[in-house]
Length: 398
Ligand code: AMP
Ligand code: MG
Image (tube, rainbow, N blue to C red; front, side, top):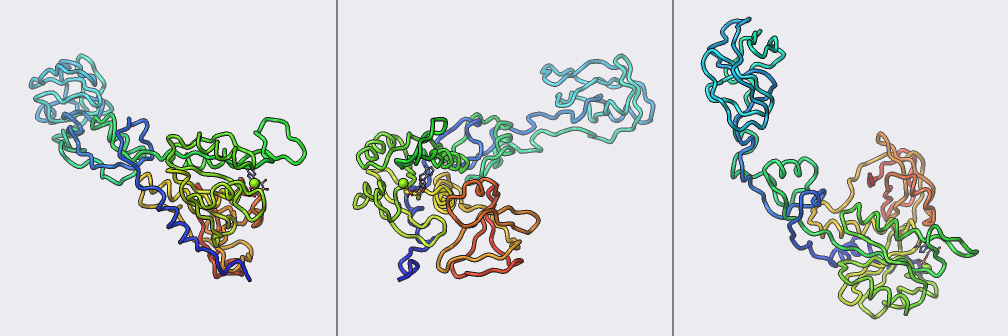
């Protein structure tokens, strides 16, 4: 019997995993906390932007009718720097020196940039005939009071946060970041920085998965990994899942003995499956008590690929995003590739100019190759052989 017969598809498993969390609750957060989050409600502007007519240039506020020829001399009656609030009216036959962003004085109808004058402070010579309303920025021309400024469902990136601040918002309603806790398992694991004994390896999955979860937008943290001991594992979970929205475990779900995650969770709210994905075949999902849990395999590349395939989309769903997957581009393979039938294979690669180079090979312990990659190369379930130049989907990781 081949493994492929009973395997769950990637789509089925993704659908199950996406059922673990709803879209997150709406919370009001300070702008500094909102970077990359999804806006939960439409935002209308409470102010006009600009709030008042003002100068677009450093220069002179004039009456256009006073400057009908090049070389006109006007006495400079006053200075209007940005931020001045008592704005003197402009009297006929005079100019005010004015700075960018300063309010237009009553009586002025054009700005002459300083570059088109001699820069005088008592008397100014004007070397241009200005157009009516030249270099004036009008009240509300950017956005008017009551107009829709930011649309619910949109991602708050730098420009949107800038606009929110410009219209006077100090905070915005967003979908709360899911709180993700990562727990690695393995008696062979040692904390980086500590001495390594024969048979031991440094624990790398929790740091990697926390970073991946944070990059996806979650509020993620790790707890100290545990040995392959069910009692120790259960105790760690009880402590770790207080105030968690999602638990990620690593390791202990394969077909061997001492599979601590499987042993602890089988028949206790978690379903274990073989999924048609390579790497990352052994997967589990369900609930640890009331807390949603995804059990990832321990091989580092398996853990990363299954995070990308299943966990990242779930985090993005919880954040309120509608696009759950990575941007995909088509690329030509630089060399031929073989892939097992019945499994969607994710190889590691480097993409440039429409061509993808595979980095390392399929084995799921090749973490250095993963670290040198910038994309995942997807070989579909029904494809076993591809020639150099064949087109494939590439998931861009950066
Ligand atoms: P497991 O899924 O527990 O059977 O582990 C599969 C392989 O991944 C083994 O070679 C483990 O030593 C390795 N591994 C498991 N967990 C980790 C981890 N947290 N960090 C690094 N390697 C791991
Ligand atoms: Mg293990």
